[in-house]
Amino acid sequence: MNYFPEFTAFLRNLQDRITGELDQLEHDQGSSIQFQSDEWKGEDWLAGGGRTRVIEEGLVLERGGVNISDVHGQLPDDLAQKMPGDSRDFRAAGISLVLHPRNPHAPTVHANFRMICRGNPESPEKLWFGGGGDLTPMYLYEDDAAHFHSIWRSVCEAHSNVASYAKMKKDCDQYFYLPHRKEARGIGGIFYDYMQESPTEMLAFSRAAGNAFLDAYLPILRKRSIQPWTAEEREFQLWRRGRYVEFNLAFDRGTQFGLKTGGRIESILMSLPPLVRYKYNYTPAQGREAEIMAVLRTPRDWI
Amino acid sequence: MNYFPEFTAFLRNLQDRITGELDQLEHDQGSSIQFQSDEWKGEDWLAGGGRTRVIEEGLVLERGGVNISDVHGQLPDDLAQKMPGDSRDFRAAGISLVLHPRNPHAPTVHANFRMICRGNPESPEKLWFGGGGDLTPMYLYEDDAAHFHSIWRSVCEAHSNVASYAKMKKDCDQYFYLPHRKEARGIGGIFYDYMQESPTEMLAFSRAAGNAFLDAYLPILRKRSIQPWTAEEREFQLWRRGRYVEFNLAFDRGTQFGLKTGGRIESILMSLPPLVRYKYNYTPAQGREAEIMAVLRTPRDWI
Image 1 (cartoon, chains in turn red, brown):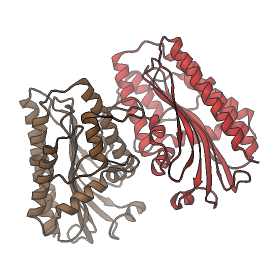
Image 2 (cartoon, chains in turn cyan, purple):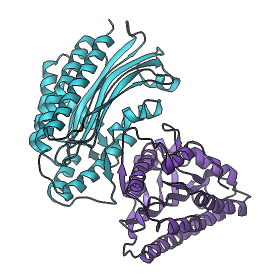
Image 3 (cartoon, rainbow over the protein chains, first blue to last red):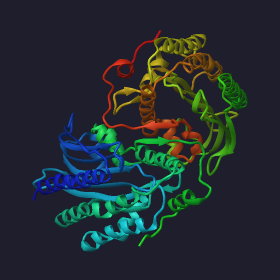
């Protein structure tokens, strides 16, 4: 059973729906900025290709990318050793998105859903699923965090044969963590990887989770992106974005994998924020800024 | 023979001279901003400490750090395997600096001089030296590049028993390289590491190289930081700084070592630029912007 045709068709459709809704939101708020689409082909050992969609300088989204890709090839030695399976034949398909809103009260979000196989996709030696979604608020809104988590919990509960919200929530807190700062990147969500059991059910779960993304994020973005904000809040946002860059470049396995394997750099690094401020030894002492930093040092249950 | 007392005294003095000259330059250009000094003590397995000096929002230097440290401890397993020698006793002393000027015509600079030992510093099992200096211009000035390199070449020639400009220049081009971009970080300088032979001569070379830093950089900074610049040049500078962040967080061995070993994070990450702009798929097509990018793809001999 080759799962790739169904999954890649789903990914194209999901990308269309997500960028369509986000374009609509830009339009509703009076902006003429829309996502731009780039089809690309793989290079070197990675054949196949993808469709990168990026928005920059929108009113709502200061920068964001929603990318799909479906690549295949013969794994080089170093990579072959790091993944389940023995075959050299490799294929990976997925959607990956990061959205950086302009408004400091609107959280940055990341989501990713992918399927990877070694061997012939018609009868894979190994086939596994990975993905998840997580939220990085600059300012804490507990109701946003509860809403975001409750959507993922519902999806997990509807697919409880393969998905556990409790485990995926904990794994998310562990993965999106800056060990040198002893801080979480954000307030979490769900994260899963190397899911090899029950591929039919995992494909159904991946579809359901992908479909849930807009439910999880769009209401938050719509509400927060019309709040007024101050210059001080903007500065705090630029500083918080520096942590996002630290995590993505120094720790994120997906980014490092991409940079070291000849992935399409501009698609991978669309995850970086548009504008970032680094400051020496800054720690907010009080107020809403200190509140979120305290939350990042101590993961919470949000629902 | 314990080389640490002489080297650490030299480092303190060198830090004073470098920050003193840079403070003076700020003052000469009408700024009241000066370097701020933080003495710190090591934590966990790293005892000892250091003195971090940072300047932010100066007229000449938008952000910069000149740090010295002298730390020691018992190496943990994973680190012990990655370095020459068997002893658990470890000591490292050095100066590390990164300066990010405000003016897009003034180049960013990095320099570092360090001495590391395993075993008792009185009679080390292994003792080695590392360091160098390299320049990252946003806009190419060939005479600046030639001047910068000629100073390092003179230092190497005066210590030709231990130092080869040709080798150290080549090693610098190889080290400060972004493989995923197929670009150099800048126009190079010198780089050396794991120099274990002739420690007395290497110490003399390290002192000479440290002393040469101001000769190599200050004339360039003084000249370029009073040039007029446009908003477009400023934008190009912010974009170029993104590459600096990519290299430092994703590839620099020193930064990764520091982040993963409990070094003082705010001293390590003073290397990051003050303000950075990420843009999707931007490549300058012509003019001065395209000129520097072409140079970064093809290392040159500057003298």
